[in-house]
Amino acid sequence: MKCLELFLVFFKIGLFTFGGGYGMIPLVSQETVSRGWMDEDAIVRFIGVCESTPGPIAVNMATFVGSAQEGFWGALCATAGVVLPALIVMLLIAAVLKGFRENRWVRAAMSGIRPVVAGMIAATGLCVGLRCLVPGIGKSAPALDARQLVVMAALGVGALVWKKGFKRGFSPIALILFSAAVGAAVYGF
Amino acid sequence: MSRIGRLARLFGVFFKIGLFTFGGGYAMISLIEHEVGEKRRWIDMDELAEVFAIAESTPGPIAVNCATYVGHRQCGVAGGVCATLGVVLPSFIIIYVISLFFERFMALTIVAHAFKGIQAAVAFLILRAGARMVKRVPKRPVPVALCALAAALVICVNLLSWRFSTVWLILGGAAAGLLMCRAGKGGDAR
Image 1 (cartoon, each protein chain N blue to C red):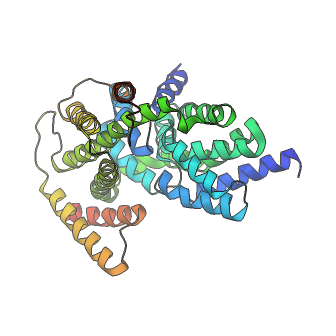
Image 2 (spheres, rainbow over the protein chains, first blue to last red):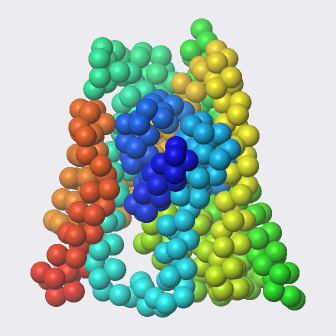
Image 3 (cartoon, rainbow over the protein chains, first blue to last red):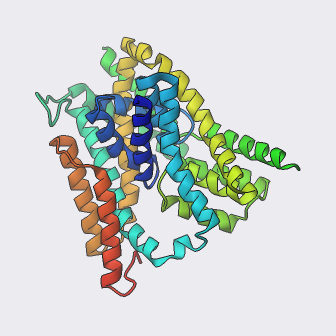
C-alpha cells in the first residue's frame, strides 16, 4: 500500500512540476514533510546530492524518497510516478497535438503559469537560505547561526575570484564541492 | 536496421545523455543537441528548439519530455518509452545505491559539516535559477502580481507553516492566464 501511495504522491508531483526540477521543491517539501517521510533539512541536503549526481533532479528526488521509505520497490514506484505524467503528455503531444504550442489556450495558461513558477522558485531559494542562516525559523526557538554567515561570505568571495580567474561563473558541481570544503572547515573548528 | 536495433540504439543514446548530465535539465539541452541533432540527425535543430520550448510548457522533468518526444519521432510509442527509460535509468541506479549508504554517510561528523556548507550553495543555486526566471516575467501588472503573490504564499507556507498546496498556485496561474486571454484580445504573454 505504501508503494501505491508513493506512486500516487509522485505522480501528482510530476503532474504539477513546470520549469525544471527546482519548480518541484515546494511541492515535494509539502507532500513528504506532511507525511513524515522527510524533514526540510533532509530535503535541502539531498538537493545538494542531486546537483552532484547525473540526471533530472525530479527523478533523483523520487528515487531517494521512495528508497528511504520502501526500499527498491518504493524507489521504483516513486520514480515511475514522477516520470509517467511527462511521458503520457509528451506522447499525446507528439502523436495528436501537433499545434500544441501555437494553441492560444495553451499559450494563455502558460502565460499565467510561468510567472507563478518564477515566483515560487525565487521564494524557495530565499527560504532555504534563511533556514540555513536562522535554523528553526518559523518554528520553535529560531537562532542565528553565525558560522553560516562565514560560509556564505566565503562562498561569495570564492565565486568572485573564480569569475575573475576563469571568466565564467561556477558550475553547480564546482560550487557544491567548494561549499562542502568550506562547510567542513568552518564547522570543523 | 531492425526495429529492435533502433529501439536499443535510442535507449543507448539516451542512457548516455542521462549518465552525463549534471545539474538538471538545462545542462542536458546542449548534450541532446549534440547527440541527437548534430551527430545523428534524428531531428533537425529547428524542431529540436521547438521541442525544448514544448518541454518547458509541459509538466515533468525537461529531460524526460525531450526523450519521449525524440523517441516517439524515431519509433512511435515504443521509441518514446525506450528513450525515457534510457534517460531515467542512470540516475535511478546511482541514487538507489547512494540511498543505501546515505544515512551512515551523514552520520560522519565531517560529512555533516560539509553538508552545512552545501545547504548554502543549494540556496544560492535555487535563488539564481529563480532570479533568472523572474527577470523574464513580462513587466505588466498581471504577470508581476501573479509572480509576487506566488512568492509571498510560498514564503508564508515555509516560514509561517501555512497549510496550502502549491498545486493551487499552478492551477490559479493557469486560470489567471486564461482569464487574461479572454478579457484582452489575445492578450497573452507578449
